Length: 216
Image (cartoon, rainbow, N blue to C red):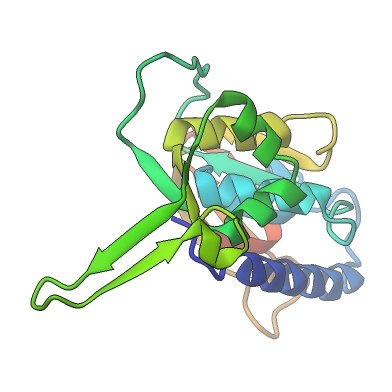
């Protein structure tokens, strides 16, 4: 799910989000009475509360450059209570060292370790059409593990635990949020048209400066 370039890519995304929202926010001149018909107005709306969406929301809550922004996370499924069972799930992800670093910076990795994970200390990849192969060992990378196998549900619970903690105060989460459609901002339009509109199936609507699609 997360490649070896995850950390640098996420840092780039956060930098661009910060620059974009600062530029848009500096141009705001509408009163508090504007958009009264909308459910809420946000700096950033993230559509999709999976691994990527929740991690991004958590990062935006903990990054000092972005923690002053008002963020909304929309997730289509219901908020389910997590129960760690003795039986392992077969839905897992392989996480690289860079992903571990990212999760550690968000205080998520400790939550994973408090539940369970399986380190990968040796890996061999071979070609189907020849005898060529390549091997990776933890001893080749200064005794660090090659990767980590983590159940999807465990990783999601670890992220959500931190996302809903008192350290993240600028993120609102709406579960069971079915998006019906959206209208993107138009260049050169007036202030109202420069904001993105998200329409929900239940009739609610939200407006934002930046809309991020993380729903697959």
